[in-house]
Length: 47
Image (cartoon, rainbow, N blue to C red; front, side, top):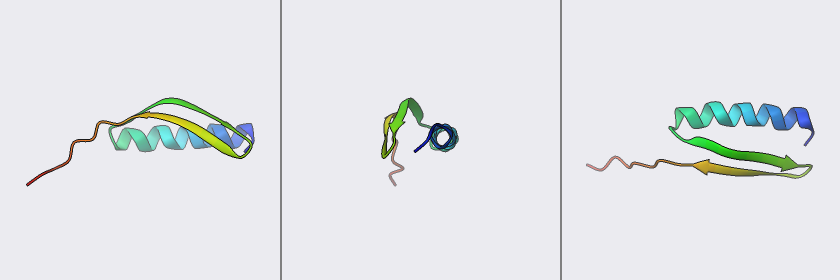
């Protein structure tokens, strides 16, 4: 992945995680992979 691809992926993840009520804590990557640290607030809906 190049720098432009990493920036785009970061923006997409930020928007998606907001919708899921989560937060992207850390994001970085290299040529063949990325590292994510995500804060997840999972609250299952139980009936």
